[in-house]
Length: 411
Image (tube, rainbow, N blue to C red):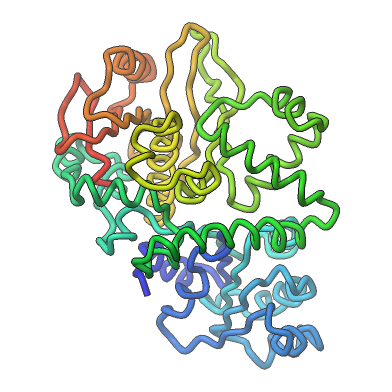
């Protein structure tokens, strides 16, 4: 078992809420994480027909017989559970840490949480392994420091590289799904990703969306892999695939809701600039992206035309997964003006006494002057205490007043 940084935050949520819902993409390690919880939890899997029949025969009775420390895997497969769960929670509202539900995101799960369990549950997402998790390192202190709005000197001190360049490169190529990381064989990793794509697209998404044309959706995902890291134009995608723009919007929503695609809206809160308002997005796992693009190894990846955008997506996912594991909620945006100024990632959140954290991401060891000009101007205009430039450098460096370059190996 590979330790997960989310475990501490999950245990904290259980001390405050009677029920916690853990969501995440298939095969990201949800069941393994739930098996590592402290206490005497009883586990029921709704993909197991005997467990599902036991619960569905009489959900109210089931919860009276199992009133505490109950894990229900793939809870979206048992819709009658949610109304019974609301009654069970309200019967003893002050008692915390009683129920833990897990599931891949689906319209049914989201609907039931919002309609039946609003105000009674905390929801948290587990992604595939982050960069530090893959190499079995403890969580970087950077995220807690950034979340607390710590002094820049403290953040600089925590931004020292903890991995080698080859470790970062290997993770970037392989992605973060746990099972491939437990096998050294590159042949196994390749076969696993190929079969995962088939089973994920053909079984799971089709089961969630029965009217979906599987073959066309597969073509859509292949096309998305070519647009990963780019600003999306739905009209261009619809013309390429020969489908309507509403269909493209629906398919993008499905890809985002099932954790395959990361939707990054444009940041549009500037009154002084004309901003590009189209969203961009990334295939959320770099390893999956590289398999879809048929990139065979890390050596070829380094010189491939998609290298810069793939690297950007990997860093964005590492940051967002790590903030989630630290219990720090952030909202991601991208920033681009019609004049050409661009910042790869704007995070909105509660960072101590400030709300914005602009981040530029570079595959090289140094940032070019144009990138520095964009982020410096944004920091000055919005009075941000800090802007980050994440590079492949060996150590952190101050590039300008309030602009810190830090190595990806520190993440």
